[in-house]
Image (cartoon, rainbow, N blue to C red; front, side, top):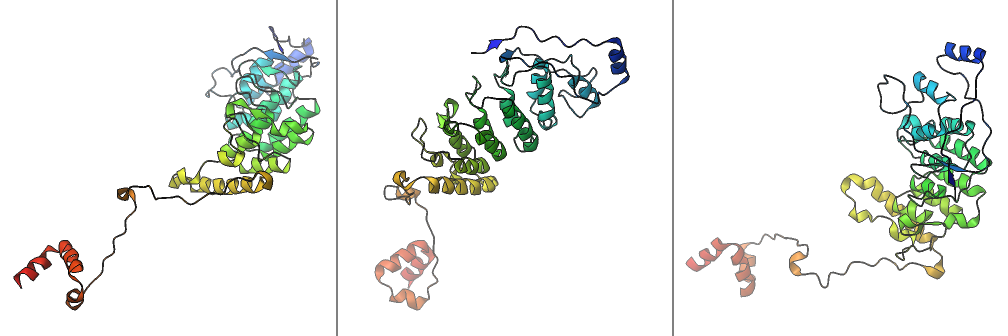
Length: 327
């Protein structure tokens, strides 16, 4: 069990010449100096994200010179940098590798945790690969660096019970899935998560229509016949395309392709039952779909029909009935 670090590490002391040089530079040209890394992981206390004075925005922007000054300042603590990483905005997530490097430079152990989310840097890196908000390339760079330093891919956040592979599957980042499984033990690929009915990463990808992640997981040996707590295999947790509205036509196509992919991946020894056509035998007649056909008949045709047909026809056209009675 990890221990809580009660006090942030003190920044290195600078001599007078270095202080004068730092005052002359508005934006540091180089990252902050590297501190010796701890031997054991700790949980860092929660802290607010630092922002420049009189800043116009409520989020941290690593591209802004004033924010860069804070980012590369050795006095900015690890908890403050974790608070920056938590901000779910493209400006931050696209720079996950830069911010992650700054955290490591301050002596952070590769498996240290953020006290607010109980997530490690590897968890944050996998989350930052999300398309639209994050940058998969930056996320892969940081993940490779963390794994090279000994990051543990089996660690889970206590709040979500998700490990790094679960995050990569949830956010549909196949490149991260490959990186995580490259040197991982075989059991990692089928590790389950209680927050998803004890389903595997493949269940998570299937339920969220993450086609790319699902394909990558299958390529690396994920079990398509593994059942979750509800007895469902991954193919059975794919959202039903028939339940989707017209504005989700693209998602419906993905769902159909994903379900077919997962069904075909199931071994023949445990094949899923085929989908059967719906049975309407017990559906009340007033709920059945109706079709109306209109046929144009000539007086000669009408005269040739039997009396029952003439009566039914006259019920629809009362004026014809009256005409016949008058005649």
